[in-house]
Image (cartoon, rainbow, N blue to C red):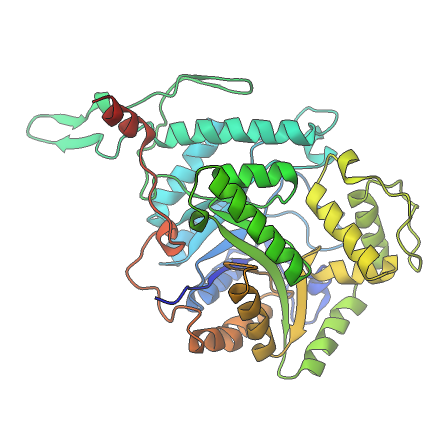
Length: 446
């Protein structure tokens, strides 16, 4: 069978471009409109996407003047979308820095059961002092500490998901026995960050665990991904960088004792699609012309950890920026943005324009054939297992991709034409259902 492309729809209110809400077609209230997300989910399902994804963070992103701010809690929203769709996977971001393992494991187990095995968890460690201050901290924890906490969090969550054996429910009406207590395994975990005693109060789910997704590309992030992740959302600007990241992550996964085919690498792409390349570039320029540069400067200064007022719009980035080692926030995105600005000798104004659509993800303007060519090239030349599709404007950008790019990918044999018999999100990504660790341990002792 021909290797199949994996597609994930990254849905962000009116679209990924920060100025998308200003277009005549956009609804400034779409970010809190369930019908908007139902429409998008059904469109992605019509395009036979593997999954859709909602980003999230425990803080108010940006100021209210910049773009639609605030968002519906993603697990709540995805539960609603589970009832409006049949096939597509449902991935939510949730932080290991500002949650507890028991509550979060229960929420994802519930979503997996409600959706019939379509849940996925994008695991983040949450950078930024703003989020930290919402949880009683004066500053964000150090980068390495956040990943150490995340590793223990995942270990506890997996113990909780495994705390019910698959056949713990007996349902013997004649004998009056509903379940087998011998097949319940309380974690009794006592670690550096967490103490969790009892078993989960939700049975083991159709997938066993939700699909585990990760999005950090720093050294700590890649080590974490190699140990745990089954899909990785990443940002690269060039195919050379993407191939290097892909090879590195697959090698790290093998070194961690895992099958490299069991981790799928999905770079982000922001496709601006039109019938001609000139029209696509004109549409891209319309979006860039709607950027309010004062917002872009403030956001860039925050990312680069500079004092307000440091950057000048028509000058390059300062030569004396902090090193990546000194950054405790989003290390990999910091490096990507600085390297982009240096490599292409961009002014701050130009850099803000380049970041306006995808915040560092690849932006590509062209015809449906050109977009399909770019996707196929990265997919076949060792740079990706699929793509995180990030429409600059919603719903029109997703419509254009599904209506005009998806048919080309299908004609080339790269993308399924129908979902087929595989039902769970893990099955769609070609991943096995994880064995219950307690059952495996007991069998090893027999």
